[in-house]
Length: 486
Image (tube, rainbow, N blue to C red):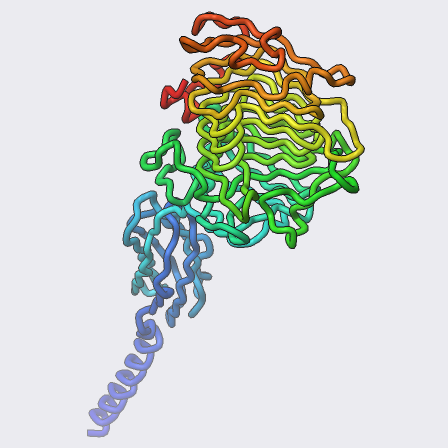
């Protein structure tokens, strides 16, 4: 009996020992990991964003995996091995397709348990239209493929440089008076508008549906003007004004000192303007105070200006107020006033220009207004398709120009050269030569070329001219060319 009791007690002892030993060798049971996704967000098509997922794993972190829709995803900062909590950072690159996207992150713990969380994203279209509401006071770039809307008078000032890449479209909002929109490059600042023949830079109105890559407007007629202001470039070169060495540019309220131009540096550099088309401008800020398509006030010879088109500006195409730039390859089409207007002892050069159907004169040529008398300016190699213009050239007694190789055609009766006799009587040596004209039936050479200007003009058949512009340089990139306006 005692032996049986002993055996029974021993069996109980062994059972307890075996049970206790087995429990200590088993792994404890832990809760599965938990992953929390960040809040919904958006990303622009083609761009990258980062997402932070928080996790907890009582058994310790082991690994993660990520997948994505409407883009690609990768783990940039993973969980820490055996850590019970932490943050996993995921990089998501959106596709080029607008719409919904998602990033799913799976976390596995040391016991093989998993959890998954999904972050929801919206892939948005690439922004290509930008509103410009404030002056530009630091270096700024407007990028290819984009449209920039000028919502007011915008000044590049404080020595800043505005770079405009090829193909950019700039659109001015409607406005008159003090609210007329314009882009002004103030003295000491620069514009680097370097378009190309394949991708010209176009200034137009917000009413124009034109987009980057287009040349002709899809909805506006090339005779519409005054829909916004224009481009104004101001420098420190010499000007001849009634008093002092500087003045306030026309088209800008006198209260805006950013409109001052003029100085003593004829080599001043305001930047580069090339392969640029300026359209539908000339908003009026007051009686007789319109904005030109391109206004150059005291611009120096260090500025590059070439391959310029002005279409349907309410006032002049290009007006030169003193300064000394060389402007090459110009088209002025359907401007409401004069195509090319020179004032205040402009001392630069206009070379290779095409004038089509100006509202007033093909050329309005004035001289100094004050005591400063520059060396005069040069205009050469110009073709004028006169059409409905009021006149051909308006000289006066102070005109300080040397003109040569000018061809006029498509004239009508009553269009003529004014005050050539006063200009040619100057004692400073300014002179013109080599004019050619195709006259309409019934109009004599002396009817159109008055004051002795017939002596420098030869009548030729249309297309037989030997002087004038090289028109091939305007092909493809100008609206006038693609519309067969000449």
